[in-house]
Amino acid sequence: MNILAIDTSNDVLGVAIQKDDKVVAEWMTHIKKDHSSRLMPAIVYAMEQVQMTPEQLDSIVVSQGPGSYTGTRIGVTTAKTLAWSLEKPIYPVSSLETLAYNGVFQKGYIVPFFDARRQTVFTALYYSDGTSLQLVKEETNMPMEAWLEELTDLEETVMFLSPHLAIFQDMIEAKKMNHFYLPKNNFHTPRPSNMFMLRKTAEVAHTVAPNYLRITEAEANLLKQKKEQSDET
Image (cartoon, rainbow, N blue to C red; front, top):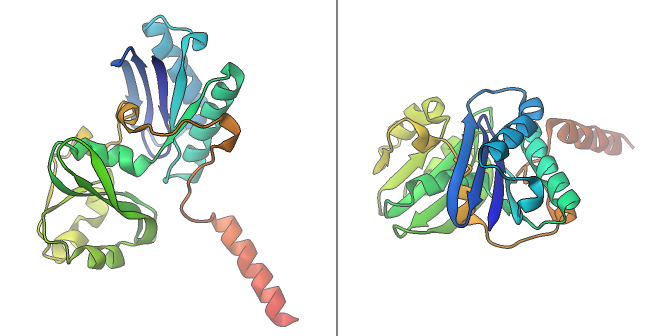
């Protein structure tokens, strides 16, 4: 099967192509801007390198978040457009699970997270048996301090994975948990090729939606405004 993977949910723009169960192309950039203008050229470039046309694709895998609102929306919209126009199924995959898969070879708990600003994170808790991941605590958006408190009762060692590890490392260390980090290189970056292993249920294009895990600031302000108006009446 020929499968295209797309991830623009966070800082990394990633594109990968699988052909006959083999990853034949993977393209990643670590630039925090212009996912909208660089995604399609990256897809075209990757497909040209493996001499594949869009019509030869059997399905598309896309990261549906959580992460950047804009980045997630760009990736999901592009994937949906391609899937709809080509009449191909689409597989939405969690960006947190994609990151956690970097540590799947190590048995034990894995905590992937992304900075959600204001000392909060997008995160979840997984357990690896050395070959596959099991979701232990559902994806959430919460203060990192409170999240670490929830993890302190875990009896086994915890692996933390994040491209934003430096922001929260002092907070993690202060908890005196039994934990460790993988080397600070691509292990802390969600790889688009991981998504091939994580795809589960195929969906039709129009049913796939970004997973923001929280409402946007504009939506929050609107709800606040409506509540204030309601209180005044």
